[in-house]
Image (tube, rainbow, N blue to C red):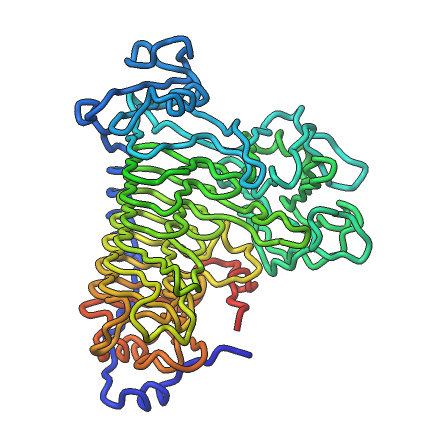
Length: 555
């Protein structure tokens, strides 16, 4: 059933006295002004100073790619070399609560530890410990990837224009989720059979990803083909397929050896780069997490976890489940699962995520086990090219939504963020193309938000709609997200919100509210978006939009 598109008559029926909002034409001068402010803030994050060792209450430990695991690790002059040595120290009690661990800037650590169900990972953090950087240069980087930038890494197959990576990329637990060419000059389009554990079966098709672009200017329909061989599945440049049975990676490229055309090729593999099995009183400062197929940083039941001055990019794309027919794909830059009692993510740069940027979430339907999420604060971040930079959801059974809060999100805020290009670039290859700035509670009527605000953000350019939620607070409702002082820049063909057909009492089926002076005036008259500013532009943001690359197809 198609989502209802709200009309002027629908607004008037719900709230006859609403007033139109001021709609301002967007200019290149205003765009340059906003980008300049965002760049200045991003530069501040890039050049942020690290936590000082003098601020650490306990002992300080140092790790460098140029170190030695036989060192004592207690000074910049005697650092450990590997993360494995750190894990030993964390497990044997050498590194304790109150201690600090400092990684040398300019160094890089790739995932070498393995969890069968969760994939590879690079670093396991412990409660009560601060993790930061020392030295000069780029923030210490953690990855989960393979490097395939040498011409010797690729061989022609007997299939036309199809190349095979010469090394074993592993089974489904190491699933390659994306391939990054020259840090974004191009990016892979993953082709997935509907039975990914058994590719090349007769009568099995690949997942239909709709219209896509590979970053090189090519536009094509990907997927929905039979897959008896790589040649049948891969038809366009930078489409790739991971065969988990033989551990082979196939890539379509009609311009010769891909490593002779590109300077750098990175295979992002399944796994959460940084994991926190215990997630209490952790501070993560000034590190970079990039090139992974699952999530960047994962916590469980976060209790006073702070992530600041970090960079997270090129995250997700790998298959999530391990069941034979599960084709859902990761991933989020930062994800907390379960109860949240303080998750503070501030002054970070997040970009190129297949799914969400920053999120805490759980699907809790048991009233005997309430799941409360409190103090999720995502502020002063710069985020671009994610499917939804802000995602926060909990669940209540619909018949429990109006009872004392069984599950709820409370005392949270999303303020001062710059959010650009939601649903564009890497994340657009999701089969469900629904890019938004905030998937806040989704569309379920059982979502509950209390004392939560979304203010002073810049929401600029989205492929589908600004917000995917039924939880914008209007009139004198006690529940809902308070919105104010935001700046919006959207095309007139986009939507402000996918929400409830009746916004006042949050009832009815799913509805789309077009981005217009009527829509914004309607919500403003109901008390939402107080003092917010609304800019609009006509036409398409990118040429490929004319070919429905980013078309919202979930109506």
